[in-house]
Image (cartoon, rainbow, N blue to C red; front, top):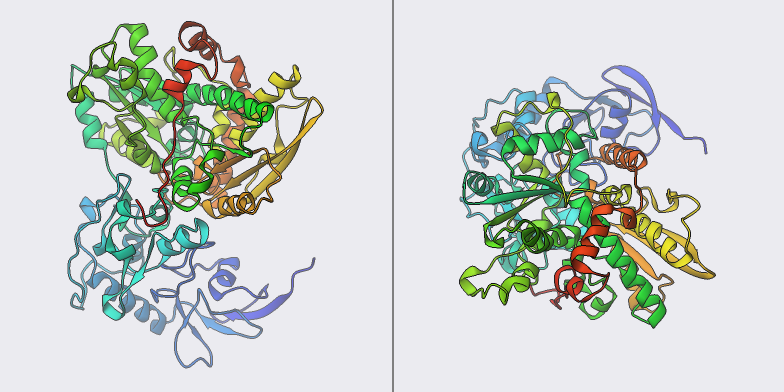
Length: 593
């Protein structure tokens, strides 16, 4: 369909641009960037900051270009003295209430407010007096810290929580100069129906919302000679950490990442992909059992902890639809402190397990009371008491936190050679790698389930119908004459649509994969900032490239997983598997944390 164009004049020059665009996007299309703070493509058009103002001929006042339309014949000045002065004044008003602590801020050198101050020539001081009182941090969440003093009221966090995730955990409260972002009854993120997804931190232009930083605690563990510190890395880290270290967006750096982790001092470097393969075997057998014994359908994946908490809060009556499998992170921790500890003759209390995850919700998941499978395994064997208690996972670091540790250690990431993961928890297949992209769990599960049921491999291992960034994708599979429909969704807003279908008795699916974050884990709340759809695509391309280049591409072919069953677990869905690899969920409700 041919685009309708309009004629506009910008800074004295004539241009043709697509009709219906905002001024900021129309100018961008002709190579002129108008600075913005509150505006963020696909997320927010709040027009609150006043940084994007332009002069429009005939207008009574300056126009906010993120909401003003570029119509036929419009004449725009983007950098006149009047515009530049207004931008500086508006920025100074924001800075008047902003802490001058850039050196101590997690977003230092990656802060839009800091960058804007440099661009507009503001030295950090302001002609205006502070109008807001200093407020305490919100540290109630195990995953996310909120600093109201750094909030510039751009509304990005509010809109991503409401419009993309449909959680509504935060919103504006009060009015005028007392306006602030807050939670229900000011209880704090840890005491409301927050899913810990961290998408609010991803879109925040300042350090007002950040992940809880556990790097100091991990440094302490690494320096303790009594501890054996193991690290596992999620699939999406290998396409995010290079970017965080200054390499190309979506750079595939698996071997360099392993080498860098060894240089930090970890005793063993393992791969969460190992337990991703294990998850597929357990989850695949669980699905087959439900299909053949009349179990609850559709079965829904349980790898994404933000999604699990969303389910518990908003659809607690449907929890039977969730797979009982723990996430790969939690399966790894349980096995590291049971199977690996037993195999290596190590007291599990001396093992520290650190997870490197693209996800802030994993910090919450690690401290769920259900996640103590290894402790339960050893409790009677070692006569453990309450003082001996340990979780399966001790610490979770995001991609951003790991990058900070690499920089603190002076590691020249881009010059490192390629190194391999350790055994026996380091082998993986291509099926595990694609867990990092939306649709990956489904594709990996189908590769194994089809072969188990039909007795022969899929005609093509690349199930492209479930790939891509459409909100909801579906496919139909023929399992030996039995046709089943499956669906894939990313973001909690799309998940809600599928859950409403189930609630109304209209769901046609047998199996559904849900990932909390846009694009799946590669767009997780702990990944490098910014993360745009273009960057997500580059990361996805790298993930699928690693899958194609793997010698083994089906989870049930993983030799170390086979050995795990032979030596320890014995069989999928067996007694020990249920003890260590499966879990249950909690009915919370909307107003219960």
